[in-house]
Amino acid sequence: MLPFHWRFGPLAISPVELFVFGGFGLVVWLAGRVMRRDHRMSGEQILDFALGALIGGTIGARLYYAVPLWIRGLMKTGEIVGSWSDGSGFYGAFLGGTLGILITGRIKALPAGIVVDATARYL
Image 1 (cartoon, rainbow, N blue to C red):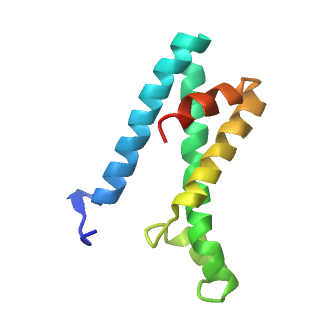
Image 2 (image 1 turned 135 degrees about the horizontal axis):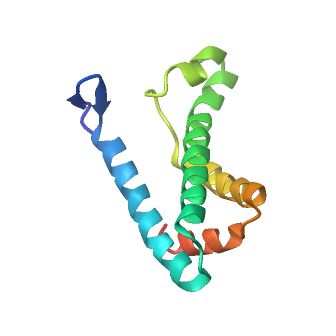
């Protein structure tokens, strides 16, 4: 990708970030339709799972990138969360997002398997 950002005041968005969040929104919308239709889940429940997946995926992607660098001594502990723009990894985002969905289901006493099933068809 070309190393540029669109600047909106203090906010800067790269094309990669734009497409990641666009894809995330599309999957939430499509999976939300399935969960409403087939499993009668409310919009609030769908939002809970979407936020769990977003938070888990963000943390997982960063850890997937940063932990190997930290183990090899190429990154200090404070830099793992100090500079989020350095990189991330898809596999970490996938695993972290799935874990976020499962944790959200456990906390909210909701069927997380339904969400995983409804979301997996769009990956």
